[in-house]
Length: 292
Image (cartoon, rainbow, N blue to C red; front, side, top):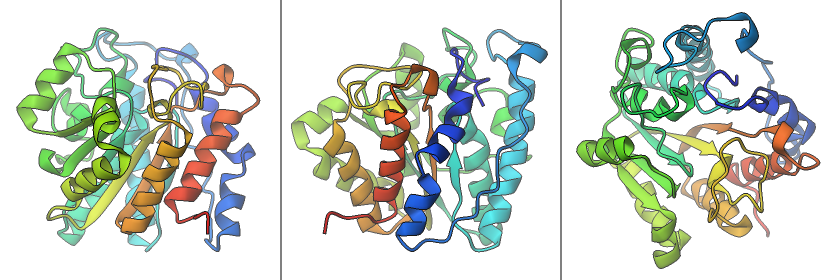
């Protein structure tokens, strides 16, 4: 899906990740992989923008509901859902699906959000109206009811169980929302000062405090554009190669991740698919690939 983004091309990311061999890489590690294919999403040339403050809302809601149902079904079947985006608006569907499964099991959910951006805008605060800047707001109950109650329920994720890592670009409305809700935010400045290991220790403590499941949402633009140029909204000063891998290795070592999505790989802006290749490497690290 690229409907939530202001730039075309990110809808081709699942193909790029497949070409990068994400399934084969996991199989080589001993995992069994079932590729359920892509969702059928109408592209922006054949649908209306709708409200310019929440562009393509109707189709994003429709698609998110389908994704949510698929995620919940995968988890009820005892499997691990790995979502390949697409722009970050896909997180609305994936997290709603995980939350629905948790509600069914009477369990609590934490969210680890690895991103350059907060993605906690609403139509009232977003300068662009692009919904890929709103998914975290939606799953925390802010914004249009169509998004906050995607399956008829709030996700019921407690803000104190949400941790953002790698943040370096926030808009004023996002700062207000983050402070009011009490979401845990670890910026690149925090990483510079404290080191990635200490930051991740704190972030994991936040997302596992009283929770039973942890959803990891990885936006590739958390990584510096010199390492991963093929992203729609690059911001200088991001994670370097080893910091990004270490984050995923720490997640694997903690053995708390119960679902994962990888988003915002844009092949049009990439160089010889190196960003998708790197994203596939990070998935491997998240699933336990080590140097030794």
